[in-house]
Every structure is written in structure tokens, then in C-alpha cells.
Image (cartoon, rainbow, N blue to C red; front, side, top):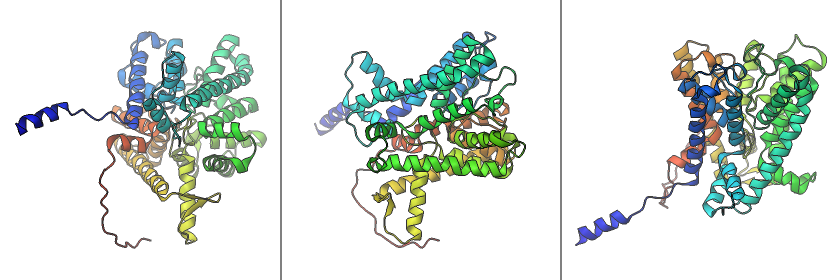
Amino acid sequence: MRQQGGSILHRGRRAAPPSSFQTILAGFAGVILLGAVLLMLPIASRDRVWTPFLSALFTSTSATCVTGLVVVDTATHWSLFGQAVLLVLIQIGGLGVVTMAVVLAVLSGRRVSLMQRSVMQDSISSGRVGGMVRLARFIVRTSAAIEAAGAALLFPAFARDYGPLRGLWYAIFHAVSAFCNAGFDLLGRGHPFSSLTGYVSDPLVNITVMLLITVGGVGFLVWEDLAKNRLHFHRYQLQTKVVLISSLLLDLVPACLFYSLEYRNLTGGTRVLASLFQSVTLRTAGFNTTDFSKFSEAGLFLACGLMLVGGSPGSTAGGMKTTTAALLLASALSVFRRRDDTVMFQRRVEESVVRQASAILMMYLVLSGAAAMAISHLEGVPLLSALFETSSAIGTVGLSLGLTPHLGACSHLILILLMYFGRVGGLTILYAAIRRSSTGARCPRETLTVG
């Protein structure tokens, strides 16, 4: 009887529901696969031929993960239908699969469950579960307004060069791509993979794209805080203060270094624009106005570091995140000063958050380095060049030294995994794979000497 009862209990035992992290992973994977299927269709290519699955999968992953790395030139390979598919994937990937699902549920009149709100909370790195529906509406409306303004500013330049109809499509496409930090462009007709190199001295295009990248990369929660508190800096939340200051420094300091290290062939305002643009775009945007293959090794190494840092939490950008880098710096300074706590803007940060930041840094360094060594060995390319491509992939940047289209299938698969990892986040993948231990036991403590 005991065995029978036990078997009945065993049969009645239900599997644990998927966690919010598993839902986020499945959502991004589903969108990527659907996009790959659509891009494979003959209607998606200009020549009306089937696109190989690996090329379609790579492009769909790059668009959904708002990276910008490509194996075929976007302008010359994809038809208008294919470009429209890419634009939708970029928009979904930039705003977040979960955010878009919540908005669609609201528009269809369905009630958003507590589980869906919790998933969105984890998706945008929010500290609260309340107000998620209102925040989703705010995100979509604000994004649409910013993208429309960006398209209006870009339209005169593109209409001048490509005519009014194509200029309008180009303005919309590039505004969305820049705001979502995707880096996809349609300017490769004359010279494939040329990005914005033809506009290196155009202030309007440069400043508009930089503003779109910056606004998209600071994060939705920062927008909300700015909208609520306006210019009262002392009222901002800690995350807003850290994001704004670290983003400003990560734009200006590297720009000064690029001005000193590179662009000696440029003069005046063009050199300033080029230095600032590359500093901004390297943190997950993927556009470029100059050829990175002509950078010095010092410039390339600096670029790899910026790509790994990326944008800010809960934004359209990927990467390790500005707050992670800032927190690790603050933690190091607290050790140097022999302080027990990590303090930022007169606020103590929990030790668990510092440990998370250290784990994220370790994951990004190990994965980008190991992937670079693998690609360097497989393809016979310099390690620094391979590191540039892997940093670009895991940071969801999309910049390339021209290697990606010529890599083999194994290297492309490595980059696909890195792009996916960089967009959904390392901790999201780990939390989805590993359930939290329920035991309360703690091991004995012992001192370990470091340094």
C-alpha cells in the first residue's frame, strides 16, 4: 500500500513552472528562430534565392540581440521585405521581448498576470514589480517619439543623397537601429559594409546618431527617473546618478584618447567628430564613421575594453553594463582606502551586488578571451583581431575589422552564442540553468591571503 500511495504521489507531482529567467531566454530564442525562418525565404533576398540557414540564423540573432555583426551586407543582400523583418527584430530586441509581449497583451485587452509582471521586472532589471504595465506603456510611447524625432532629423541628409522615398525609409531604419543600439545600416550599395563612413564630416548625422545611441543606452528606468525629477540631480536614484556620470566619462575620456592616438589624417571639427562618434558607438551601437582596421593596436585594445563595458542596465544596449564597471571601480577604491563598505554617492551598496558585478566581469573576460583564442586558432588570424570580433559580439556592439563575413561555420556559431549571451545577460543564463539552493547550512570560515 505504501508503494502504491508513493507512486500515486509521484504521478501527481507537478513539474516546477519555468522561472522568469527561463522565460526570458525562451522568448529571445523563439524570436530569433522565427526571424531566421523568415530571412531564409526567397522573398527576403534581393535575388529571390533561399538564404542558407546559418547566414539567416546569424543575421536574426544579430538583429534580435541588437548587435549589428553581419555575414552579408544588409543593403545589397536583403530585399525590402528582408529589411523590414530586420527592423521588426531590432525593435523587439531593443525594447525587450517581454516588454513587447506585455504591451501586446494590454492592446488586445487581456489582463497582465503577476507572473508576466515579474518576468518584465527581471527583464528590465527593475527593483519593483508594481507599475510594470504603466512602465511598459511609457517605454513604448517614449521610444516611438524619440525614434520619430531621430528619423525627422536624419531625413534631410538621406533625402538629399538617395531621394525622398528611399531617404524616408533610410531615415526610419537608421533611427530605429541607432536608438536600439543595433548598428545595422543600409548604406552599403556603393561600398559593402561601409556603415556611416560617408558622413564622417556631417555634423547633423553624427550628432543625431550619437544622441539616439546615448538615449537608448542609458536605460528605461533612468528615463522614468529623469521624467519624474527633471533636472534635480540630488533627487535621482543611485542607479540614475551612476549611469549618467559613468556614461559621460566613458564617452569623453576615450574620445580624448582616440583624438590623441588616431585620426592624424583628419583635421579640425572632423577629427573631433570622428573621435567622439567612435567613443560613443563602441559601447554597443555598431555604427562607424571611420575604418577600425586602420586603428593602432593601442586603439584596438581600448576599443575592446569599451565594447565589453557596453550600455546601462534595462536599456536597448548590451555588454557588461556601465553600473558594473563603476561598482567594481568603487569597490576597488574602498579596498585601497581600507573601508568595510562600498560607497557610491553617499550610499552603501550591498555586498551581494558587488559579488554579482565581480562574477559578471569574470564571465565576460573568460568568454570573450576563450572565444578569441578559439577563433584565432581555427581561422589563423591575429589574437587581437579575433578579440575585437568576440568583444563586439558579447558586447552586442556589431563593429568588425572585416573578419566576420569571412569566418567559418564554427566561428560563426561561436559568435552567435556570444551575441545571445551578451543580450540576455550572463546572470540570466546562470539563474535560468541553476535553481537557488534551499539549504541554509553554511561552511566553516577560514582566512585566505590574496594579493
